[in-house]
Image (cartoon, rainbow, N blue to C red; front, side, top):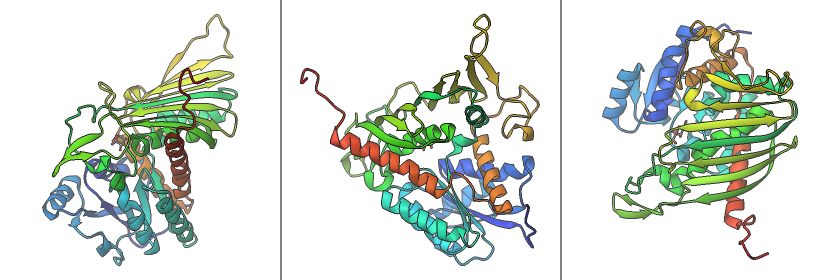
Length: 382
Ligand code: SOE
């Protein structure tokens, strides 16, 4: 049910770097393609006055401010989209929710379990007042992955046995690449684990509609020191992470992520193997889903490359005629569409902060397992 409002919803976004830019394009384009409640792009927030003013003009925000707290008392701001580094998520999200603003926060939910748990408590209290919250796992909004989830839920793969997720990047492969906030535990929480294994873990639980119950993990930092503003500085997070995961329904998943995998730019691949069929996805070919139907006649069995551009595929009725592909940025447009639709209909959006906390729990268990080295057995010791 769509709500009658006396005025358009007022939106603010905090942050204008990579994610602020990706979300800004989504806010700019969503109403042109999807039926969403009326909204206005009122404010972009950033600490550098000149830079945020320039970004607001470029991305189409009416105004720019440097202090996010000035939004708390503004009656013309109804929705806040938080695209800041993780160490700011909890304080901002809780303050905005308590002030009655709907909140979308980029993944990972927060840097620590304590912050994540506090966000869930605040979000659940806010929900009793009709205030909505969501965490931004944008890959849930890739049409091919939403289709994969539907096929798995329909039983087209039978009983799911194995899942393999690999997410490889190389922007830290160069050992002379400088120190950034993403390489300090106090600002990033963890490295590749929180940044990209969070997507992998979310996908495993999203695709299977299942819950991870135990993990075995390993973390590694290949470049232990990087040049900071004041000279060499220790890297306090992982460059790469590995995990095997058990799911409540009996499946076993493996996850491998890296930010030093030279030659891989943003390579997310997912394979799901069931008793009746299998699926494969590659983000670099995000309009395709490979489907193997094990129930078909062996004479004609073979992997089908499904071009996910049909109007009947998730999200695609809003875009182009069949065969005309979409890109990575559309996932953020779909995310904003889903968030606005949930706000309008009064339905709790997904993934909720509680789902974000569920991912954090898995990542914390991987960290714990890696630190304990409990699954490592020295060759020759047995
Ligand atoms: C950097 O590794 C990053 O921007 C992630 O933070 C995003 O979540 C991912 O979509 C692309 O890579």
